[in-house]
Length: 355
Image (cartoon, rainbow, N blue to C red):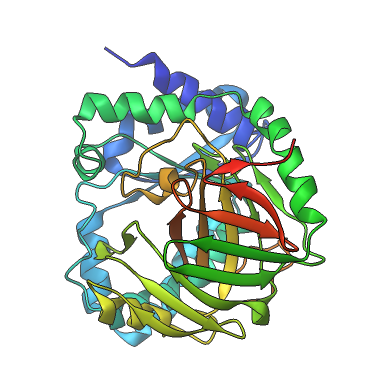
């Protein structure tokens, strides 16, 4: 029996996030396991009058290509992808892996080379109207230490919310941070400062992520100084980095340590010139997501946490850092954390102190 929550999610994605209109070209980029959601969304947009094209991603194919493609193949990869995505008006990306660690055995060098080659396609997608969501799979459920049924409920409860109300509630945070210059983050083994003067924040209330719930800024690139410790694992390409500790000087990560996978951490930070600089400072504001589940789409939205992304700054954020990576790392502030704006305490233990 079909889960009616899939139809509701398809409605949110098509109507709220992508605002699909008759005659538009829509690409559904997804793993095959998400077929029930693909079907619901495909039915929705074709009834609207749009044209839908499904790009299915096979994890084993992607891994094989990463490991074996020649330099010439990587350079020409965008020729085929580009012709598809250039014509799109909107793109829905659905993550639904069979195994979240399927890339764990691929060398960091091959991952970096593949990422650099794919970067133009990803820029093409983000220049369109786009949204990313997840479909509940056994792999996601196992990573979250949940049964599949528990994970389904967790996902739908987080995703099917009133995004217009969320958007309105973000205004007070946006107004307070927009008027500030210096940000200071204090927490466990953490004392980090950076500037956001002249930068406008962006409210994330269902436009590009479902579920959603954050306000983010692009720090002034060379302004970041201090150190930060990440209580939560930092995960990338199936590799888990535990207890990451970064030290910044004049914007750049000058030291990156970890209890596990330190070499991998530094390999990714050496991807290109921009990978050791911050591209994003995000404030989690979805207080309905209370637990860390090793899934960045949810984890970066946890109310009372922040996340800092090394690498590329989003277009429109005012940030000028460019990189082929964008790697979010989540900092816990709910138990012993503070945020200061221009030396005034504005958040303590995950709770804002202003109306």
